[in-house]
Length: 141
Ligand SMILES: [Fe+2]
Ligand SMILES: [Fe+2]
Image (cartoon, rainbow, N blue to C red; front, side, top):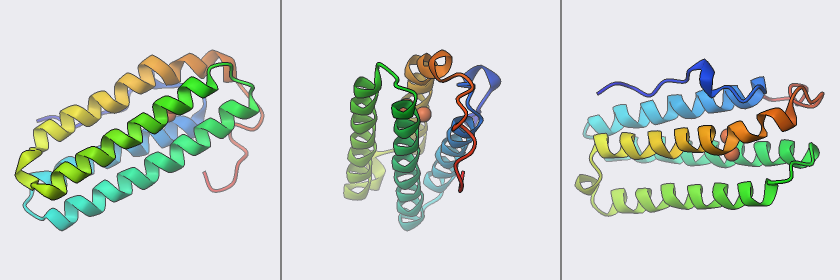
């Protein structure tokens, strides 16, 4: 099973958002590693990290889109909310019965979950946000 990879064609043209996406790719890979082992608690820890970081990234991305007056912001926010729900559901299913969520299935699901969103939705804001002066000036990025 190959790991998920961030490649240049996924760049939204905003370095800070690209860094966030790379971190999400890493967390999905960590989750796959944890699920390939036997420790349910390790999986839950990584799943929670993934959820936390996803929420953080979505909030930061939405702030950026709001500042830039992105016309599809509301739709984008709704999609983000639905995506968090999908991972929460997977977490519930996993905690209920770890065997019901095999590592390969989780990796497959999450790679589509992330890649489809970046390619189908995040790339759409690329031309709109452009070289916005606020992009890389926020502290703690
Ligand atoms: Fe997004
Ligand atoms: Fe994003």
